[in-house]
Length: 221
Ligand code: AMP
Image (cartoon, rainbow, N blue to C red; front, side, top):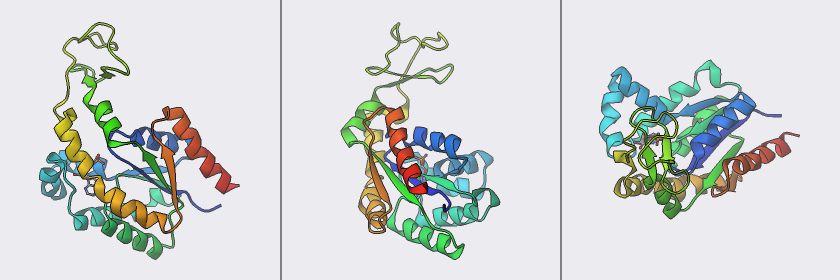
């Protein structure tokens, strides 16, 4: 059996992050999230953090050359040799081509690309309905998991549940428009290589994970 080198693709709000965590736990893979790496660069006050801050705040893609160099350094580290889950990369055709070359140079290859597919309208409904707790950060949803008492956190009891600034429809639509290059460039790139499995992201998270798992296990046996 070859290494499991997986790309998880999904729009913001598709539930891709949840699936990434489950994959790590189930298969001992290393998660590589460019978004997390950029946020920690920013917290650490590095040059990369400074150069990428404005793009991130605007919900726009960071230029390819910066992201590709970040990924090249990360893929050279020892902990990803036994398999990884890429989350949030590649987001453009140029990034996908650079990734193919980097892996090839290291004698590695991708094994699977999973697309967690959810329509834009569903994502807008999911994200704009979120109510965040100002105290513990717990997230309710006006429709799917409303607080028992309006405005009051069901976990810690604090009042003042609010909509995060990022979770307004206008902001969500901007983030979704940045996803267009994934739909138009990245998915076709890997479809042409026969690596893509589409998963219906409207299903409950357990069912989504069961489908991912069955693909991984069928091909491993
Ligand atoms: P994420 O947490 O994956 O949604 O990423 C947060 C932000 O980081 C994005 O909105 C982009 O500004 C930036 N970013 C993360 N990954 C990439 C990437 N592969 N290409 C370009 N920008 C990225």
